[in-house]
Length: 156
Image 1 (tube, rainbow, N blue to C red):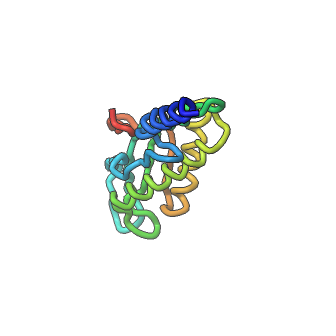
Image 2 (cartoon, rainbow, N blue to C red; image 1 turned 90 degrees about the vertical axis):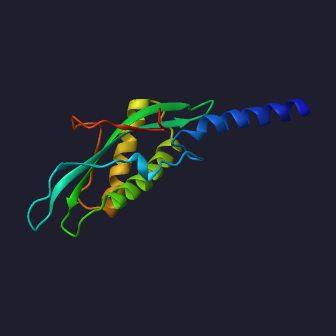
């Protein structure tokens, strides 16, 4: 009886260590600072315009005997500097991106997907839907823009 209890305690501790640095359902929230936005098209004129992006490699992982998953997902978030409604500050873009990434990770990791490429595509798609609901004009893709060094979560 005690042997089984110690085994469960050890496995729980090992899983907690593994999950600590991942974007997972029970832990590993992605901080807003992971999304470092860089202006790539300057805003000019009185109307909507300008463009900034953040590039992040995000580790999604699920510890499971039947459905394990570990996937590094390259995510590029593009945000207008000024959309049709208002300017979008870096702080707002970072906070909303982190919230969307957390929610998208929870959705993907609670599902059945075990293939990393498919999980990443699903993660980006879900993140895009969530971000577009709160920030008009946002785009979420794999890495497309050259010349900007991506950040990583968790950091290397």
